[in-house]
Image (cartoon, rainbow, N blue to C red; front, side):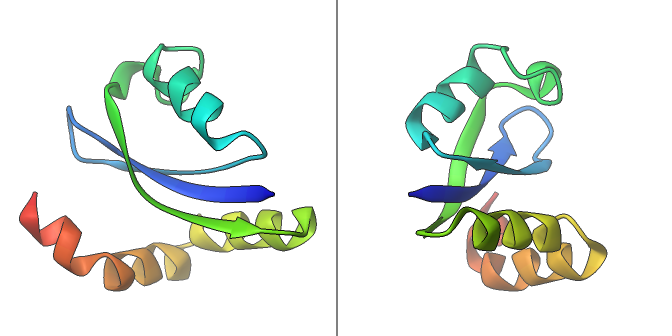
Length: 85
């Protein structure tokens, strides 16, 4: 399976969208500082993920969620969760 995931920083509340074939390992990598783009924002919580059977579908979804329209979609999809924090 291929995963597109959204992490939220416990430090500043910022979101991070990523892709992985090994979701649990990737989240662990983020939280241990192995990923430079999130190193300063750890700890991070997994707040959403989608699973795909096709790698290119997952990569397309990741690219979309990183666009301005995709960020708006995230805010709509997760509005209750984001409002609680």
